[in-house]
Length: 180
Image (cartoon, rainbow, N blue to C red):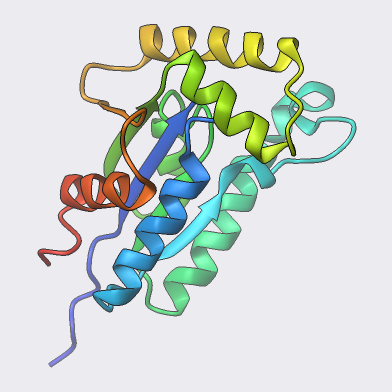
């Protein structure tokens, strides 16, 4: 008797710069490790980080999707079937990204949100104290665009008053991965 290969699942975590996507993913990773839940974490911002930006110079290259497909294939070969994927706009590109995984995953998409004051504080800490106004303005515009553009099925989580571990518990409950 052969064990059935479980259907994969992906958690897309999106949100503005400084909202806590990477920090929440790390906290979720720790929570899943403590529960011995097999998973992988991919920081999507790094899949096509190059200069000149591949998506500008070669938009048809779809480098992030190609790199995700290659990485996920390697994880699947090792028996992983749960993926935590962070990227600012992943909640807008969830269909394309899920298709790139190549194995029809169950998709959970979450938009993390935070107000300007919280975000500014987080960005200042991340950058060592200085926050250019243009960076906060861009983050604010991105927040508005994401909130207006995401589907109703995307869960919105306000992180202003939550510690990363609390966000991780909320994310884990949305995926059901601790219950499996």
